[in-house]
Amino acid sequence: MPSFINKVKLFSGSASNYLADKIAVSYGQKLGSVTLSKFSDGEFQPSLDESVRGCDIFIVQSTFPPSDNLMELLMLIDAAKRASAHKVVAVIPYFGLARQDRKDKPRVPISSKMVANILTAAGADRVMTMDLHAPQIQGFFDIPVDHLDSTVIFIPYIKNLGLDNLILAAPDIGASKRVREFAKILGVEMVICDKARKRANEIASMTIIGDVEGQDVVLIDDICDTANTLCKAAALLKEKGARSVRAVCTHPVLSGKAYENIANSEMEELVVCDTIPLKPGHHDKIKTLSVDRLFANAIRNVSEFGSISSLFSISDSYQPELI
Image (tube, rainbow, N blue to C red; front, side, top):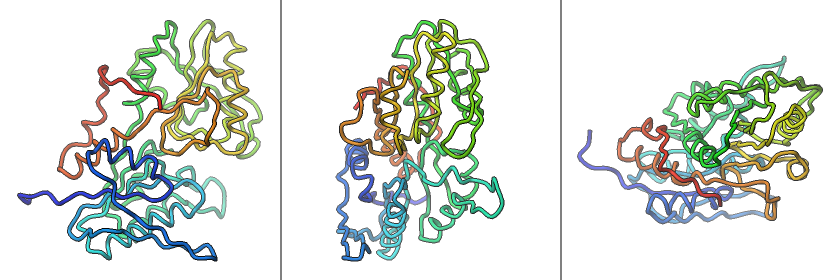
């Protein structure tokens, strides 16, 4: 191992500047300057405004729509490699296209695998992300992947709620493994909302597996898209006798009528992370916990050859702050 540590520089794509600024503050370093030039036809060109020769570069950019966000990240990676950076790490708080992780019908792409290939081809030496829709997506990469876990943020928040009759709920079968991990840590029971779909984003029916009478229910999921599933689950849980219903979701995709759905739902609150920015003036039911300290610590541990697994330890002394 070399006796020195390469200089670390942090940069951000335009879609995640709001989060990268906070990560840089938590890390204790100023965010590097990036200029994004745009042509009249919509073409754009990002440029790094300072030398990165021999440095370990961390580029923060979530890849939610539009696809320009992914393209900008790839171009920044390429720019850093061509400027002789020692290593380039793609910090992707929300890894877009992760729901396309398999062929669930004929003649469709496995888009998350394709994105993994493109990131590697662009020159990324490492990827850092959080709560992949399917953890096995890590296997799509032939470079190291640091997969951070939101439990270290959400578990202390749920504990601080002080709910007397806490029970956790999976909004669908796919979320059951994630919810079971939360339930094990908190030492509580869980129920499952079993849903059947007509098509994407449209639920045909839903049933509750388990008893929620008189319970304070917390729904847990990784992605909240249209919020149809969460809102339908909340209504059904209340119908089945739940005393209160709230939800925690890592990535607030919140498309279509999601904001309206949440405002009119039976949920007390929806708590999300800031991996994707919320629309200005959103309803008070939607609350945000920041992932800046978690990513800053992960960047520090990677750059100093420290342990990433140490970041998975849940501390009762950690007090998450709503932003």
